[in-house]
Length: 489
Image 1 (cartoon, rainbow, N blue to C red):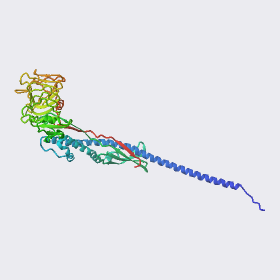
Image 2 (image 1 turned 90 degrees about the horizontal axis):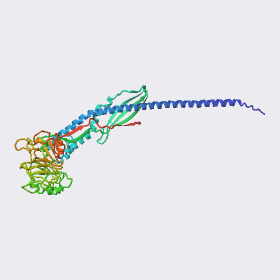
Image 3 (image 1 turned 30 degrees about the vertical axis):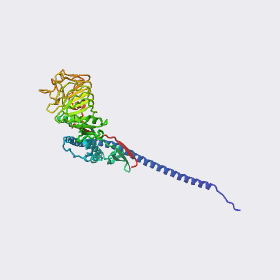
Image 4 (image 1 turned 180 degrees about the horizontal axis):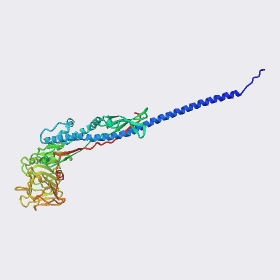
């Protein structure tokens, strides 16, 4: 038999070599993977640093752009004011021309849109309309100014280093402005690039929403100053288009109508409560059903304004006892016998003469006078007559247009026939010194140099006065900055 010799020492060496080779290969794989992971981490870190640089650049440039927008807004405001002034001038000319019987101005950017507001000559609503139309255009006009300003050229376009990290930089690449619609906000798209070294660059897109800035703050309250024209305006019925009042009274729309019937008190009683109707009367005596004595006694005016322009300049009011809730604008001379137990009345007239004594209660009488100081306030024609300003009553006198000196002048308020009762008071405009005038006393004899204040205290309507209107623009736009950053542009 053959003998086979087996040497086991060779196998052990071979296995050892195989294991060594295996572990070396495995180690090489781990080392390669580790090096690759390290390179990936380094790449991610560099990329993150580029994003951080872009974020820092976004914060920097957004703040700069906000400041630039605010600066442009301040420079934009004068143009808004100029446009507003054009509307104001045209409005005042139109108002004056319209109520003066002349053709009013139809020139203006917004006339075609706003002319329906001119129904019944409502110029205040026309003014509101034109200002609102103007305000709608301001955001888009402001965007035009921003585009013309080329904001991107006003910020530092050079790359900026992040602190001392010379390889970490950011720069702005573009600023685009989204043109707004009437209802949308103004949005500025700001694009910033961050970089780490020369190879890795990251871009961030941010939206800076500046809202829809309001460049106007308009106060339409008229600034009323005294003039003969202003006094004349008081006696002109507002929005008068010579429309005849119709029956029933409830069928009449708001505004002025001319009453041509002969039962004015009955007509007034049919007007619905809260109505804005205003009555103009040519012949008051005929309107109340009498052609002789236009007696005010036991008359209920229903708090409806009545504008009267006597054909001969004089209204013979007869007695006014128990006159109630009446508002009269008498463009002429009111000749009155007496007044007792009246309540809730306001009588505005050019001149007044009271013959048989007047005890005013809950009544305001305003004497506006005439140009050339020919207006009169008289009550002592027959010696014993007296004028008592009683509880809740006022006598208001425009001293600029009242005759105080010479023959046939006003009665002296210092005369013993004049007195107060309860909380009655007299209000003078303006503040002057005269022998016939009472000295100022708290809450009883009041002087004012403010014509508008005088009219307000004396319950005189100013709706028809062609006053200047206070229209001022804001110093800058009303901005509400909001920023949104898109990390995946």
